[in-house]
Image 1 (cartoon, rainbow, N blue to C red):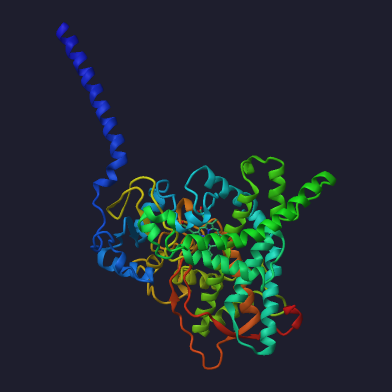
Image 2: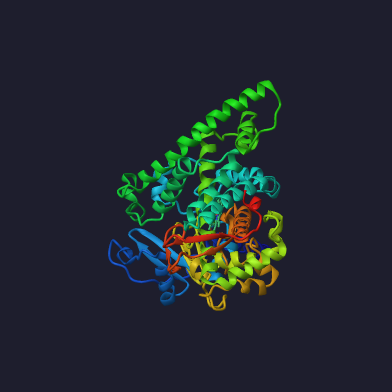
Length: 517
Ligand code: HEM
């Protein structure tokens, strides 16, 4: 009997030891299993500088070419910075969907760290409570469908003003650079939603444009401070300082604005119970009242949030509409098809309304195809996994910068037929789900990114782009200036703009002049 007891004890101990071992291994394998995959292949670099000397200015094209040699997941070393580039829908899905939490941090460029300092920022904050709070403020007060619906009259006013401005050019028979008009339209649509007013195109409008384009252009530039972190505090190429200056120019304007409204809000609180006039007043009022969502949110954070929203919503939408107009001018039969649809749905006796948009199926397909062929943010925002990840059978160790080459994914021949061609019709053929702008489940189509850091303003962008483009196509015929040759070349940047600004000659299309006023 004692033997049986001993055996029983030994068996129990062994079982316990085995259980502890299994738990230990599981715990450690969870952390490191992905490192059992090999590192991705990639071109050999030089000592100390790695692949830096071989980078090309058009990074999206350079990365697409490397993917043809090394496959859809490849690795580079930029100085001391390891970088993995992903160029296939399946590898993107693995990261955005299967490892979404680990993949939810953005890689903050040194110039942004220098320029923005410690200000909480929705685009650059790590995945965590601050980021969650900022997204929630945007979702609760600006980007939910009720708030967007309530702001429809503001968008309508701004689009009508842009149409009126183009009409002046049409009457004079003048050529115009479309981008400036589009940018001011996007900017003022946003400022009206934020603080109920427009900004003057020549003065503050110009300042906002320079600041936004300046920040976007400078943080994407190859920066020694990113490749050799030890020199980052010195900001050797001065990109951080420039970004700081651009940010300050917007902040000075926003500071004056917020100060004047703060007084108005506190005086009104004492005097009478009036509804806040716009988002700015609403948020200031909630801050005064100690709303839990806005607790620990100070006025400087509010100004920065507004600057971010303006930055995120202007250049992208402007660039998208400019590319769409360029593609339609390049293939006039498509322009006519879009205009015929507008004539059928809207007619020529009234202007387009946002409520017409769901019936404009062809126009919807034009915009989707345009975002496929010219994704405004071609490499999305670089991510920085917080723990080890894997994609395409390769390891991506924690803290390796990861670029998703949306531009290449949108041209993946296994996903897209004739990927280089602009064919809106493909989106009319696709199943409803694949056609869905906002599905977030289509990893071969990522103009707004995917996963936890997917664009917060997708639905607003969809409305702004479709309504503006529909109004411009409905109100005018568009021509190229006599003898001009349209080029569809692009220039790499955080936002992939047309290399040459689009110059067009508008001609009034609607019979009644009052439709332009
Ligand atoms: C054509 C228009 C637009 C495009 C193509 C676009 C694209 C993108 C992309 C690619 C990202 C990064 C996704 C990633 O990390 O993988 C992003 C993030 C973001 N976008 Fe947009 N966007 C557009 C318009 C807007 C608008 C109108 C807003 C208005 C509020 C907006 C607000 C944001 C914000 C706040 C983020 C940061 C999200 C986060 O990090 O959590 N975007 N956008």
